[in-house]
Amino acid sequence: MDRQELSRIAHTHHPIAAPLDDANVAALLRRAVRRGDERVLDLGCGEAPWLLRALAAHPGLRADGVDTDAGALTTARTAAEQLGVAARLGLHHRPAAEYTSPHRYDLVLSVGATHAFGGLLPTLAAARTHLAPGGLLLLGEGYWQREPDRAALDGFGGATRDEFDDLPTLVDKLVAEGWFPVFGHQSTQAELDDYEWCWTGSLTEWALDHPTHPDAAEALARATAHRNGWLRGYQGTFGFVTTLLRRAD
Image (cartoon, rainbow, N blue to C red; front, side, top):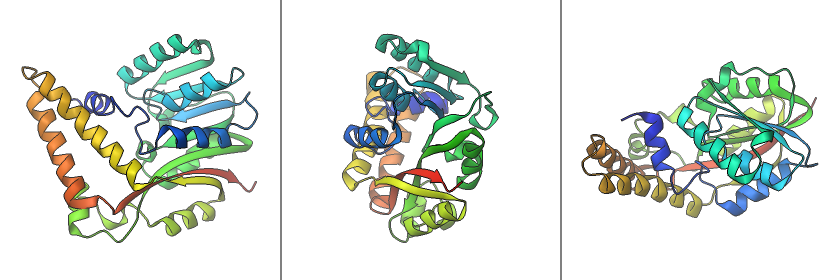
């Protein structure tokens, strides 16, 4: 089954594609958008839910979103037209690491997308090239809430201990690279669980609704395996933090 199509289906009922509820998304955007006329870039935007929310709330805002998923960008474009913000949104179908622009941005987002750059530190370096002086980076990244055991690592698809840091170590790495947290949100267990139930449930429901589809059996198997990996493995061990960062310079 196509990975991008699977992801779109799995996020049907959780379009933010990260373990955050609407209230906390709104709170983060209120802190990140300080004037209302910013230029914003989302590196790995998917269906651009962060950008659509920001554009709808701030008529002076302009934004660009970058992603390799053409289907997600089509959905984003349709939603932007329905909201009346399409003229202020640029959507770019290319790898986030290859995106260039003639101008800098007041706010750069990378929420759950550090894999697009090969990890945390390359993501920070890329964000810096796009950020205007005094600008902000909204970064969403996973971390270990507690030391992962074998079940947690296996449940996370065979992850290794060093795939994530604990939260203090993660923050230390950010500061060591010159990025200082000015706001943040640690996803609650309820947010983490809601995300997993939506992900596995949406994929399961699609498979049951399309029993003759050639991908139905695989979709159901993937949903079942993911749910088991979560419930029997990394639930309570994996966490997610979204931080608003500013550079000292």
